[in-house]
Amino acid sequence: MKPLELYLHIPFCIQKCNYCDFLSAPSCAGERKVYVESLCQKIRSYKDLAKAYHVVSIFVGGGTPSLLLSKQIEQIFEAVRETFVIDSDAEISLEANPGTVTEEKLQAYRNCGINRLSIGLQSAKDRELKRLGRIHTYEEFLWTYELARKAGFLNINVDLMSGIPLQTLADWEETLHEVARLKPEHISAYSLIVEEGTPFYERYGNGKHLEELPDEEMERKMYYRTREILESYGYHRYEISNYARLGYECRHNLGYWNRTEYLGIGTGAASLIREERWNEGEIPEKLDRKAQMEETMFLGLRTMKGVSKAEFAKTYQRTMESVYGKVLEEMQKKGLLLVGEDQVCLTDAGIDVSNYVMSEFLL
Image 1 (cartoon, one colour):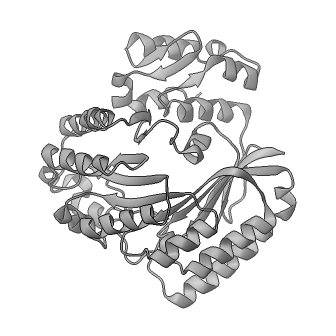
Image 2 (image 1 turned 120 degrees about the vertical axis):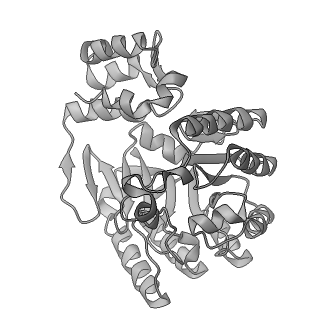
């Protein structure tokens, strides 16, 4: 049996945030009930495929999965356990937003085997939360965090966002200190991206009101201060935007970057099974050797560990140099890549322009 990751998509939220372009929307109780029933049916439809795999991680993402009733989460996990073989030490994560979590829900999550909670905070400053269109205050986050600890959660991630409109470097540093002092096991620290189709795009798209957003130099400063501050609290950066205490790196995300097979179930969820990639309801795209090698490089380079030459050769029966020799040489000369005896990884300068470096590995 081969390792498999499961992603379960819950596309509901109380209200869309100003920056959010995820497939999610507000809903009524009836819509959520129908969706959960359909999701359980879909999970059970994978009974035959499930025979070839053992599940190493599960991620319930959204939207806001914690918006569902306790019994609905129980329903979903009942269908999962009926269908799949799940490792006894599988990492099982659920995304939760402050303002949607109760003691009863947290206890239900624990009973379902959920052992990792990912709490969406974004900022420790209420004025920034308001600007982002979040539904909660920092106080409500603290209440949710303490509730999760009391419920017995020993693996908690907190999501943070830098580059928020009108945010100063000092604001961002304060948020990092506030959160790191709480000692969550994992911190995801992303930079705001203004995406089309969002309220932020209406305000900041096409070069409008740019004085409210940090410039490139400030963004870089924020990124470097993130690493410095979090390292001082005992977190290590293991991926471009992710920091963890030793042993608490998100196994599910590492699986994506290492190209472990994954099955996404629910509206808009993506899958990679037997080198076929598809989104729910779409025709699968078969990845040829070239596409597989490209993904190995540009996904693997997101991690600080980088890509192993030996693993590359073992997987593709070709040395990395025979495929990418010129690119490796050029990127190393520019100081953007560190090419060791086995590992190839981004330098700090390479991280600054990571999209450019990764695009060079497209054949």
